[in-house]
Image 1 (cartoon, rainbow, N blue to C red):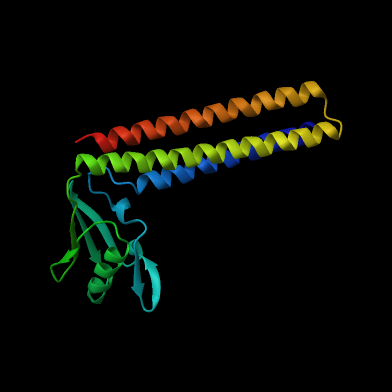
Image 2: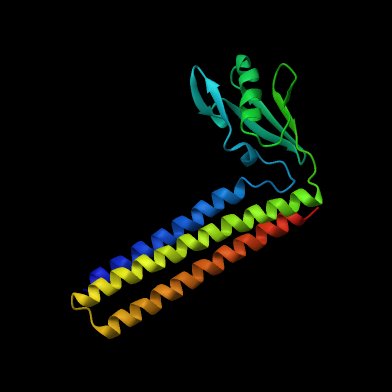
Length: 187
């Protein structure tokens, strides 16, 4: 029985960690005014008939805080890269100089900053829901084990452990949101 309890605790912790990892990726895509290659993370470019991630068809760099430059591996891809950025609907207006694609990242308005904070808060809430669902699943597994002969004390102690795990992950999510909110609201 102890092995099963440890397995439940380990798999719950892993599932909760996956929620954190997913949140980190989502928060990276929310821009905070400063140019970053991660802003173009979801951009796909048509490359010989198949959609390919932008970072696989060119080098994405940020020469300064307001500019993103994409240096394609093949010059013939410049128009496809521009099309891909516009299709991604990120609010950017790509320009090319014949050699590379240049994006000027406009400064964020106060209203846009508030929208981005709402978006980040929504992502954080989704992560919390995921963590709570993991807690519920783990508690259900413990209840099944209790019916199969797990002692009541062991079940209660494990539920306490699961709750402590949940609390620590929820706290981590709150911290991540607070950092992102500060980053977005800093002018």
